Length: 421
Ligand SMILES: NC(=O)c1ccc[n+]([C@@H]2O[C@H](COP(=O)([O-])OP(=O)(O)OC[C@H]3O[C@@H](n4cnc5c(N)ncnc54)[C@H](OP(=O)(O)O)[C@@H]3O)[C@@H](O)[C@H]2O)c1
Image (cartoon, rainbow, N blue to C red; front, side, top):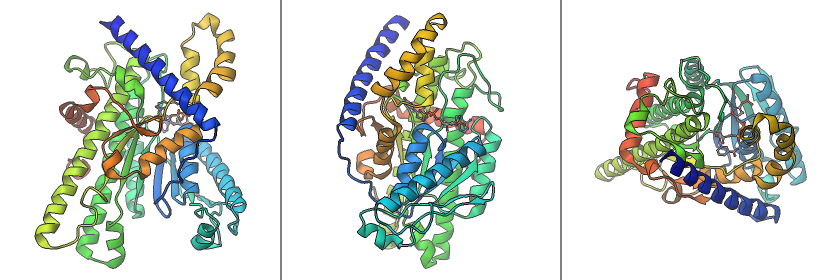
């Protein structure tokens, strides 16, 4: 059975590589993608936004006019990334003819640093020039290996009173050869890739819901605007979720890997949990929207984040096989140790840069998930192309998703106040 599963996964992997190679070819041939719409003036949090897909996503969001918070485990690396992003945004603004008022703003509440951004020409000038004025980039400390760090991040966000439009749960690690433990005593891939993001999403969504409720009760015009802006949660998963095994016999040990630790299996399990959580959250959002729409119809009031068009949404994203630290490290690790002096340069110089997608191309998949309408991507698994892809049968099982949601709530000890249910 294990052998059959391995053959199946290898075939899937080959299929993915071929699709990926097709996407890489199209990217190189200069495939035209429509500019993302509706991101101007939005606020996004990108976990792990200092590197790889997260960095490219932050760059694309800033270019589309969103403010971006890089939520990273190293403030130093995050600030370096913010400075680079700010410089790139300023250069873009200058190129597009917008009257730049200085470099793109990069501010860091945690570190107190502020650089400038945006364009003094204002939205109109930039739009005339065919580009959104760049957003503002900030950095915040978030270490997913510690649930306490997640709680402190969420508390700071709540205290700031800011509104959130887009949460990109991107940070991740893949296949450390030895079993590592988080500060909470859980297997590190399970916690970093899934559980910490699960807690972050729950706390921030509940906070957004409370903000809306207060706005509804207060009925102030400005807060009414806030109510009209739905929240979107994107969960970076992977085609490797096909290898996940969350069967009843396995699920109890998945958070710990105490019985056995197989690096790829633990990664696949974390990505299957992520995909199931993305779908479960979207079911809850869709249910709430339907209830609100029913309530509003009954009372004659306007429920602005209800109905399938403008509702909160949760989407799972597989960015493709992407040339990042994570992928290079993984592919290099597949070779036997004695061969690595030969195989490492092959993966570094040929395989990864030529056959894998660039982080910038992968970011377009993320932006598609961030902007496509609810009926297209709500609760979906968005894949390489970018388009809605095929997930495993287990990933589509609502009962399994509910069990994973319960497991997450139990491990994070989330009370009613902080759990989306
Ligand atoms: N690359 C691919 O082929 C591929 C394929 C499918 C899915 N994905 C998924 O895409 C996402 C992005 O991966 P990538 O390829 O861009 O990897 P990457 O270049 O290695 O970037 C990973 C990011 O996650 C951050 N991170 C790791 N552990 C963290 C922690 N404990 N707390 C906070 N941040 C942490 C890293 O921070 P540091 O810089 O401080 O280490 C880095 O910013 C991941 O979820 C990955 O599983 C990637």
